Length: 130
Image (spheres, rainbow, N blue to C red):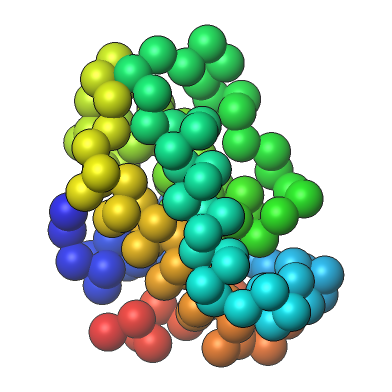
């Protein structure tokens, strides 16, 4: 997987990806649950919704809201196998490895961490990722 710096620079150039922000409720959820629980949720979502080789509703399995991880998945293009193929070169049709799942959770966590450092609604400053 490419460096976080390079990845987040590319994501920042996407008008669609760069519009996602954590809202007040999602930020409160992250603070209340803590990074360990939120990362475990991310790992569970990835294992259930992205890791299988065949996903019948690929492209629609990740809601646009309702959990901070869902928002992070759309912001980081880790929301479906089509986006994983386009942004990360991970082909659809084969199960994700444990390492790939771990890397995806790392990307989600990194985005959430950057969001929590910002004021609510403020865009992630790409220079802070360096």
